[in-house]
Length: 106
Picture 1: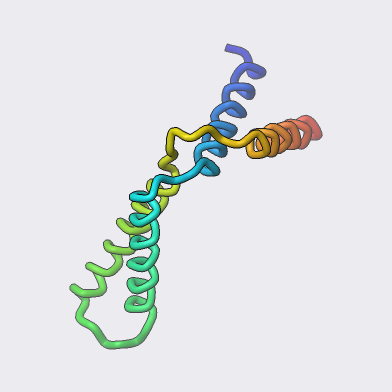
Picture 2: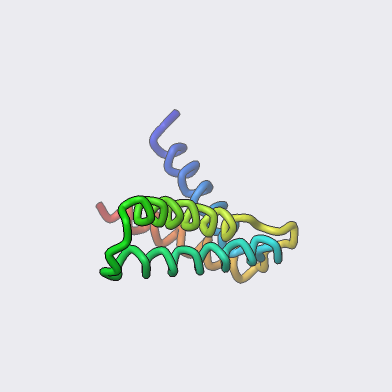
């Protein structure tokens, strides 16, 4: 495999990830994302305020933050079967060309 074909494959992967993140999220996953965001916010509040809580609660809170952040990220990356609009595809095509131009400058 040549260096050129690897660059094309990387750009194709980045474009498909971008399309997936911009695609409509199903309602169930929107709820998961929103609840996860609330858990992260509450966990950060508990972790960052000097409440004098026991260490076990703080450890549990940190794990909850990590799990909720992962759940929110996966929920956002879940795409529905509806087609992506052409404007989104065009914007990512332009972005990939801009990245290629920047790479060629170096």
